[in-house]
Image (cartoon, rainbow over all chains, first blue to last red; front, top):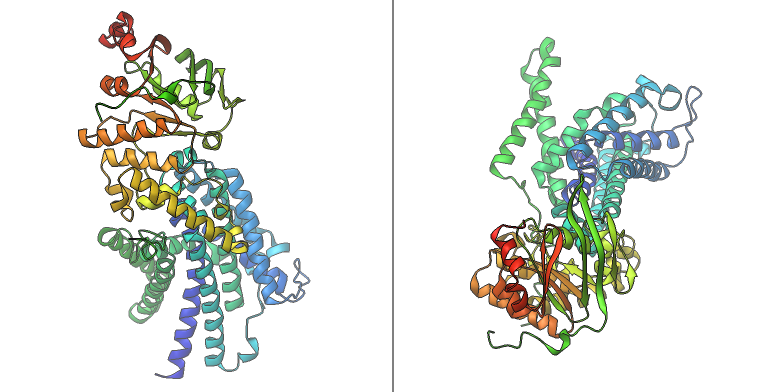
Length: 319
Length: 267
């Protein structure tokens, strides 16, 4: 296998893992709690822009940058998106699923328009460039650079996966699933749905913000067009394909759907005449849509459905 | 089961666990409950009967906190709780079941019961990371208790099955086990016999009697008069949101107003 191919594979997997982080955020909101968030792009954008503002070098034409370390940017991005999710959640979390979807979609559109138009803060349509990239000193060696970034993202996904699995198996995770299944019954058992839903929405939003920050730093440039509703659609497709309610499914779905997305882009550029390629790009969405339909028909719970029990009790059952 | 004493010694109330006073509930001007009072003493088992539309479930939902009264007061354990949210009722010692059982269908039977556990530190987000030892210890105790309750309601063999596969009667037993996790002093049972096969119905009745003998007060909505007669020391009949008759099962069953209501005169 040529080194170029390995470099590309590392790049592909690193990008896929940034989507896996978004998917993990959505899984805690939808998969475990049943919160229909159709505003994923908003929280990803907030995380990306917050981190970019914190870490880019001083820019005279906009606020910041503050030239802080990348780790501070990631944390700041997660925190900003978490705060935004808490604020949006506090206003909307009592809404029924369909109304919550409408409200969050509105938030996503508003945030995208804000980053497009508040030029002194976000750079407007030109976006923010010169975002520091992790392991930038290795940039001269594409293979080492790609593998180092892949290792970093894989580490992040692993840490998040373990933490979220720990939570999913905990009494806290059990309450989330109970609220998802039947809010009235959960309430009769003394659980406070609004409190738990808001916590899940905030944590999910923070994770999406972290993903946005990580992706922005990996690419080195962000612009409003990165955060259109198509991003929300992609992440939803990833979770549904992988298996809603299952953290492993969220990760596998992200890699698989990103793979289909990347392959279809390559197929379009290989088989469609250059003058038609802009139109043919829509075929990517069609392919994902068809894939979604097939999954919903053939495996409605996704490739890896939710585990029946998150309790590890079988071995401890006394005879 | 048929030769058991339906009037346990503990059934003579000394103080009220639930005291509902002059409850009124109106929906857009229509009174579903129109001045009902009900006192459930410690260890007492009361049957609440009445034709469809009498307001039984509305009264039940008022006591359970799912609805707020238009006027009147609800006292639980000596505290006025009329405007409290429903999730606080179980902490006050009052657990409820639903007329149509509401299990968490995709969770296992054991997880369903565990959800009824109260005061779990693991339900706090940070405690799962900051105090994992305590959370684990509580979880272990809760699992042991949940398994004992599943034995009690005869659902142990199904503990790892998703609740969606349970029959109607099994779901009612599951709901009972779920609220027993919270050790309630009073249990509100909404039509536990509805749609249950005779064998499971016997199991349900036996368990209800046993819980009452432990000293738990029970308020039972039921159309099955045989069940009410066998279980309850006192029966309250409702019609049109108001009290119609009160007394022993035999007294209420022979009350002309009650007979008239059930035949369609009052409701």
